[in-house]
Image (cartoon, rainbow, N blue to C red):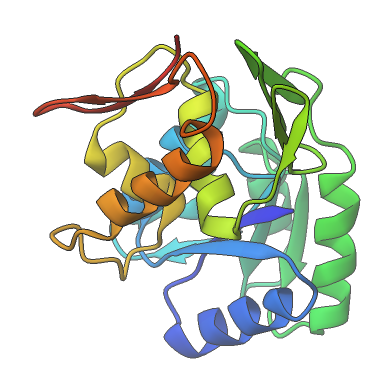
Length: 222
């Protein structure tokens, strides 16, 4: 499971990231509305955990914007205000669930798992490119019928490219999906990750599927 956590309180964000990590749930963190918008538009997530009060915008408006854009990822909204009007406002904006702070992490975990089970059918579960098969649900990968073992970051990169097959993905778009706001875009970690992924899904196979488009980014395709 992969979550986008949108929370500007660093202490709470740390607690959530650690808590979900203990349950083998991958998280990407955004602390502002603009950063969350970029992650949500470019990345693929099972659930968005979205705070209402954010720097740079309202969680309500961001939720409404994502729904207008056709994004169907389940959204759970967090707020410190426990009023009927706020809950109605969030649900009217397109949220699927609503949790008031303070909350027990166990309840948040249970609600996130319930929402993830309702992942929209419109999201492809298996992406096939040539003899490469990427199962987004089970996170299994195979090439030429042989299983390929990937780390979490390698899979996140492959997922990003696979969901935009035959499109050139620039560094900013890839970084928004694979790393959180604290990633330094001027390091060479993306290049290192691409090399590692190439060794696993390209080196012993034909045709080569990961292509570098000089000055533009990367493309997955034949």
